[in-house]
Image (tube, rainbow, N blue to C red):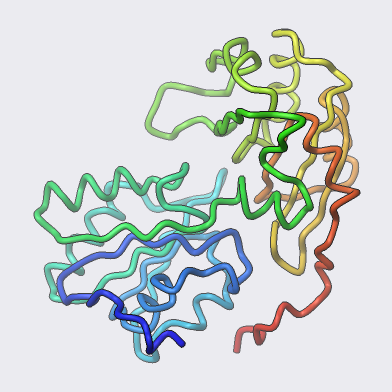
Length: 271
């Protein structure tokens, strides 16, 4: 089927910034698969599923550039410089990111660096965890009778700013902004975030869903309330990466739960 499509050339000396989705290889776009099949070098982050990496062209250089909170990680300027260097060497460079590269994925920073260096690039969107991860938990991002707006926010401070914790965010404005909030990288600071939202007027009994390792065989879903979510997540040892949704759509998860995480979704295990 992919051979019937007229796909763009992945030219030597260029970089494709590609979203790999939240985990399940079946959620890759056709362009993402095309890039994996033609890339000479794959620079990938920590959240890319190993089954996706196994789809790379045989002989491609595999270059890990993952960032994980609390662990030694490559600096963003060094990653951007690596992409530029590989492109200047005449390689087809695939920058592969979990989710969507332009949604809390530093894709904008890397694209700016490539543009400043005169390196041709293409941006290939991926399914972000705030949509795909919630869908695999049976939670719609919007529902006509519940919300017509949603706010996406990162719960993790930027390592390029002076923020030491999420306390410096305008949580009062965020609390008022939309009936549904989706928190990326918010598990570590969930207790603080929940307290700020409650102080700003959100109901302590408001439903919260935490989806851990979404779309993978290890997916876990915790349904709680804004007041209890952080403590319950700790008690149940919910692990990152996790997406958190605050709002009445979380109630639909147990009703629309369709995904059986233990099932083989049709892709062979790595190796």
